[in-house]
Amino acid sequence: MSNHEVSTDVIETLRKYDSPTICNVIELFDLRPRTAGYVDSTVKALFPEMPAVVGFASTATLHASKPAENGHQTSFESQIEALSELPAPRIVVCQDLDSPPAAATFGEVMCSVYQRFGCAGVITTGCGRDIDAVRKLGFAAFACSICVSHGYSHFEDLHKPVQVGGLTIRPGDLIHADANGIVVIPTEIAKEVAQACPAYLESEQIILHYLKNAKVNIEGLQGAFDQHASSILEIPKRVCAKSNVAAIENEENGLI
Image: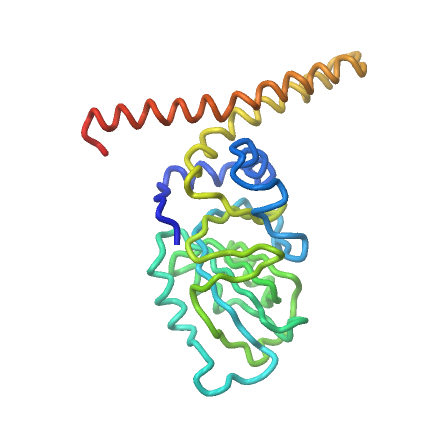
């Protein structure tokens, strides 16, 4: 689990932006390859109309194709207890070990429990069910598909690294998820990412504003793209400088 604390204010700020913007901003800090840190297209939002959710991953693995063998089952109650090890909000992340998925990972009752115990959503490499009921809860859900039955669904491991759509997700990872997809935000730059999002969107407006001109041409478009590229290169510098100033002020005031 991450040793970097992320404040409630930072989480609330991150929720205001869509996942493509989050991905774009993370790239500016050059912490990982541009093809890393996000879930592939096998896992999709079941309710793309819902706003983004942000939370800390509570991970689990499960089977549903056959009954659990003695000693190879973890109870649902144990999973809920494990949630308390993480700060809120949380996002349940399940790796379905059956391939293809044999039955549903979650339904109305499980999502109601998750929501009541501080979860913002659920992500699974398997299936969901009770779709209309879960939608009415306003509970974000991401899955590969939908299946009518829960089969022999049972958890095997809790709070271990899981594989979800080509990405390893670890317990405590900070997740941002919406209709566009799912991305893990490095907690060491979560605050900076939140601060940088407005500047990134403002920079994109350079291009979009140019396109609203009565007349456009290739040269003008290239100029807009060049200006945008130059602008975003300065964003990490400004954000990091601002963070350093704030840290110095807090230290002087005895806040850290």
